[in-house]
Image (cartoon, rainbow, N blue to C red):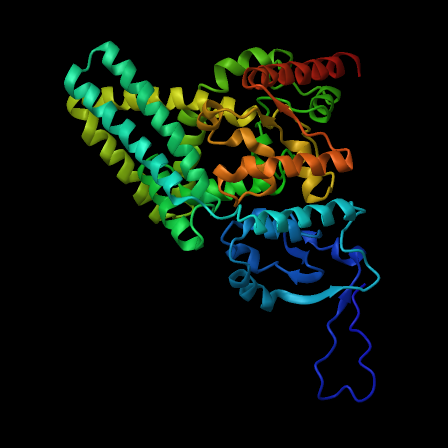
Amino acid sequence: MGSGGNQGEGASGLEAPMPTFRWEEIQKHNLRTDKWLVIDRKVYNITQWSRRHPGGQRVIGHYAGEDATDAFLAFHRNLDFVRKFMKPLLIGELAPEEPSQDRGKNSQITEDFRALRKTAEDMNLFKSNQLFFLLHLAHIIAMESIAWFTIFYFGNGWIPTIITAFVLATSQAQAGWLQHDYGHLSVYKKSMWNHIVHKFVIGHLKGASANWWNHRHFQHHAKPNIFHKDPDVNMLHVFVLGESQPIEYGKKKLKYLPYNHQHEYFFLIGPPLLIPLYFQYQIIMTMIIRKDWVDLAWAISYYTRFFITYIPFYGVLGSILFLNFIRFLESHWFVWVTQMNHIVMEIDREPYRDWFSSQLAATCNVEQSFFNDWFSGHLNFQIEHHLFPTMPRHNLHKIAPLVRSLCAKHGIEYQEKPLLRALQDIIGSLRKSGQLWLDAYLHK
């Protein structure tokens, strides 16, 4: 329980000692209407303020009742600025006899990881190369220009149309990786400039919402592959993932779809439909329901530009079909790249691990090459990206050997595989989970 501390006689005129709390008490405050968390042994009541949290109330709420120090350091660039907002939320500190980590999390791994982070800072690995991101933006704009010129010069026949669609799908995929950089505040030192350019890239170049992306994606980073916390593993009963969920569904005789065939119907409803159907609907509805008029205006600017450009060649209906075909192509690219690092890893309920161990359990890498870096937006370094989400992607390869060494020291598996093997493992993982469901469904 919390205590006010021993003030002693003659304490009047002095600042009252800060209340202290035990983990047993703090862990009780992990409800939607009652949220405490710990950062650097300080206890904060975020119940009311979480609704105004710029990253969304869910991502900060996922750490209610826990130590959130490493997540706090991972997500924020300007710590001094952020701490100004934390002062009114401070209600006490951990009792002196309490460990800094809750639920028996490995304190040695945490200490070593924080030393690694300090090493990365000393190596200036959080400093971005502005030319890298400028050239990346330039090659996206170049592809947009080439696409228009192809139709303008060669006409709207089937061959020019298909070529143009592939060029635009490539530019959309690359713009997706670029908006991801700005969304993580990894380009500019000041968060404000990252936010401004993020809205331009995701809004004007892609027709999506920066706030929708951030609120969804930050949850994924905070609790990767954790059911009910990571929206990326919320499959709406379409797929069963990992080992525990398929067995649970099987025992309960839940059969929304024939999950033993999910590795087959994945090709029909996974890559083809995620962006053009599910994401598109979710983005538009989120902007309208939340009255996010700024993001909506940016998205409208994208559609206005697209239809002004291509209606003269294809008409209104033809341009709509053309746009959806581009989304269809991009969706394949996005799904395969994002799932090769995660869906094959551990997926389960909250295990309450330290930051380093939780990210390693949920992510794996793909071998480095110029093509793999470009093709995946450097998400082939998914492990390092998850450990240091604000680190510019062109520096991830520099910290990778140190991360690998820390894994070896603590006996944690560091997975890295060839690109084709990583893509194949997606299907193998779905097949394995589907078989676990079938076995439980038939025999338990």
